[in-house]
Length: 165
Image (cartoon, rainbow, N blue to C red; front, side):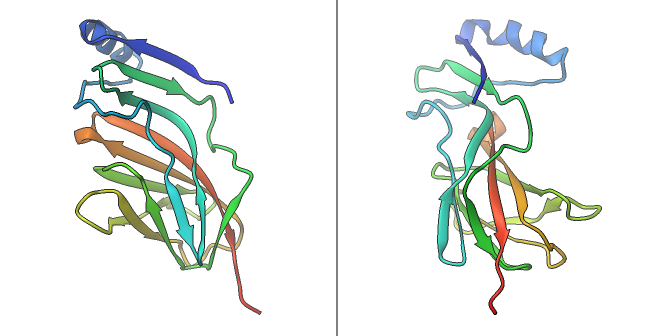
């Protein structure tokens, strides 16, 4: 896995924000966290669980330094999968308080966005339902927002359709 990693100190945030803004990228400093990068979420369905694979992210560390790592492509390839029924519920444990979770599926027709809902007030646990019309294994992209929207991470997970005989 190759990442383009950029580290910066708070004094450089203003100049970096203006420069990245010219490319359509935004960054603002948020509250620091004790963990160095966003933890990999645990995705659970049909009694099985698997860690999602981390893709691109921007994260504020405990010393106030920000780090961004860019994964070169989407979807984020994964080797393992989580079984799910068409129309089945999937839970996501971000393992860190999140402000929002956006879920995108591939090849689901005209609308790749899947509605999510938080399962508790901490923002750690979220849920979504796989669309009924899905008839193949799906790569799912999880786009999580943290720290008031100042930090973000993209993860990938493979869902495999499961049917009982």
